[in-house]
Image (cartoon, rainbow, N blue to C red; front, top):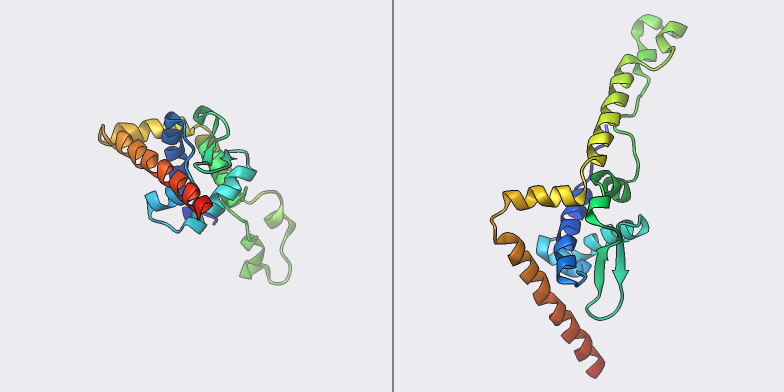
Amino acid sequence: MAHVSAGVEYALHCLLYLIDAEELGQPASARDLAELQKVPAEFVAKLFTKLQKSGIVVAREGIGGGFALARPATDITALDVIEAVDGRKALFECKEIRAQCALFGDRTPVWAMDGVCSIHAVMIEAEKRTREVLAGHTLASIAGRAAAKAPKDHADRVKEWLAARTPRRRRRGIQQRVD
């Protein structure tokens, strides 16, 4: 059975931080988002390549640039992010085990293989419902849930943390040009 990767979880967290960065009017760099979550910058950069190709984020060029949401947080679903990072893969892959019953020997009867197996039918229904649930949750709704759970000052601390990095990136860029 396929599962949602850890990359999806990190991508969702990064995107929630981008909502805060947008409120500051300043994109966040993949490096800063990686540092915020204590993961390698290369890992986050790969995630953002996928998110950008899927039209979820846009890159802002130049010193102090970074990534921003390509559309409003109310228009980006959890399913969009999962499919961007992990691709569209089935929840269940039927192995046609029903054809391998020892009682059938070398000849599987037609009735045993006719139509979708009952187990696969349950998995198809589960996948459909899962996709509906994931499509029903947007970045905005997830951010609302996170904000309701976190202490009141947490969002402000994240914004301050991100804002403090932008001038540093600008200083590094200026310093590199001077050198």
